[in-house]
Length: 147
Ligand SMILES: [Zn+2]
Ligand SMILES: [Zn+2]
Image 1 (cartoon, rainbow, N blue to C red):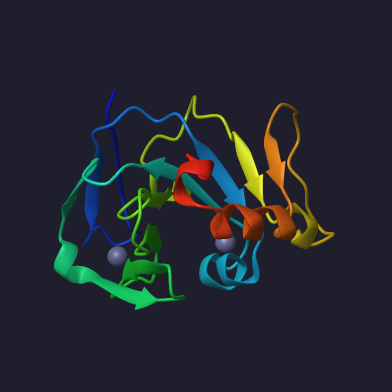
Image 2: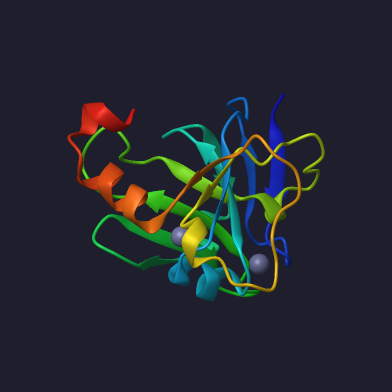
C-alpha cells in the first residue's frame, strides 16, 4: 500500500511507494529543534518515494552524515536523508506527521532515549530503544555491522 503526504501548504506532495515497516522517534537535540517537538520518521529506502514540487524544498545540511528538507513556504519538516557514504546513503526518514493518513503505522523504535525530555513519553511496549552511546557505537561500527 502506498502512502501519500504533503507539507501544510501543499507546495510539496509525495508518495511513498515502498511498504512502511520501520519507524522511529528521535529525541536528539537537532530533531527536537527541527520539528519543534519530537521527530517521528518513517524509514524509506533510497528511491522509495516520489516527490512533486521538490523545488519548493529547502535542504539544510545538519551534520556530516545527513541533511533535512523542509518546505520553503510553510516550514513543514518533510524528511531527513542520510548523505554519508555506505549502505545507508540516500535512506530517508519522512515525517510521520506529514502523511495524509498515518493510521495503522506502529512506532517501532526510539533513538537517543536518554535525551528524551521529561515532559512526555510514548505509551505501549515492544519498541527497540537506543541510548546516545548505543547510537554513536552503531554509526562508528563498520557498515556491515549495522544493517
Ligand atoms: Zn508547504
Ligand atoms: Zn535526531
